Image (cartoon, rainbow over the protein chains, first blue to last red):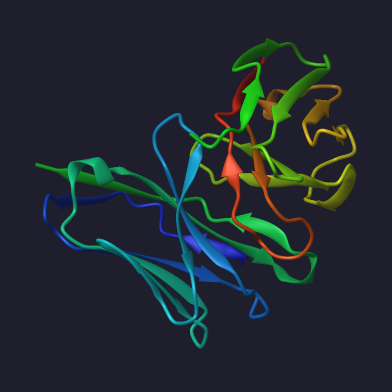
Length: 110
Length: 115
């Protein structure tokens, strides 16, 4: 099993929809997680950190479920400009090697 | 923009050649990490440098090597290039070193094609 797994999608949603992605991780010792956004042929850009208590930034909400070992990203009121690949990342066990998922592709259509 | 710069932006090499990629970290950041991103995949961690010392390495062979300089800029060197080395190489800087997947700021990447 890969250490960090994501459904590659694509998720095709209409403007205004609410969409959620999950990212599962295998190492229960992992402490810190992040969501990054990557546009086509561009570098990843930090979207938000994921805290145990949850983290909300405008239309975006990130949560961590330690019991089930997954993190989630919820996007409300989707915009066309939200179309991108969303990458989750966490440290890999005691070596603290950052491990990215393969990304989930989101396509928001009119 | 993050303030992280990389050069060159694109590069074409042939099998067996050697390549050096360069990265300038964001001002005030002393940690630089290098990643390889193949098409359709997430970035794969190559290694990290903190205050000029290697501080963690992913599952890459020794022909992938690096350096960090006193000004915290960094180089990634790849010897004996293979076709599978074709990828986007990303550099990321962060303000702290050591433990944890700290917030990282990525440069635009170098797209390497090996023929």
